[in-house]
Image (cartoon, rainbow, N blue to C red; front, side):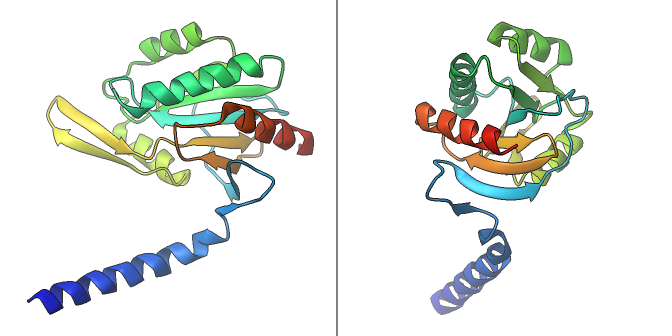
Length: 189
C-alpha cells in the first residue's frame, strides 16, 4: 500500500514538473532585476483606463483578506509615494466581486492616492479567469458567507501593450530594489 502511494506521489511530481517546464523559460531570474523577469501577454483589465506610456503594478486580492492583502497594499502605497512623478499606475483587482462593491473599492483606492484604480470583474468566475490569465493562483475556500481566498498575492509589472514583464512573489519586498526595477523597465518603453 505504501509503495503504491509513493509511486502515485512520484508520478504526480513528474507530471507537475513536466507541466511547469514550458513556463520556466518565461519565469527566470535576470541577474539585473530584483523581481522575476517575464515577458508574457496577459489579458486586458476590464474597465481599466490606461495611458499609453505607463507601467501598471497589478495586484489581485479581496477586501475581506486579513493576511497578505493589507501587506501588499502597503507595499503599493509606499511605491506610489516613492514614484509619484513617474508614469506608474497601481491596479487592485478583486477576486471577490460578490462582496467587494465597486463603490467601496473606489473609496479605498481614492484614499490611497491618485494613480490607484480598482477593477471589479462581473463575477467570481470572471475574476478567476482573469487571475488565471496572469498566472495568479486563486481558489475560494469555505462555504456560504464564511469564505476566504487562497491566492498567490503577487505584484505584476505590466506595460501598456498588456505584457507582464516582472513579478514579485512575496510581500517581504525590498522596495528600493522594486523601484529600481520599475525605473529600468520605464527606460525601456
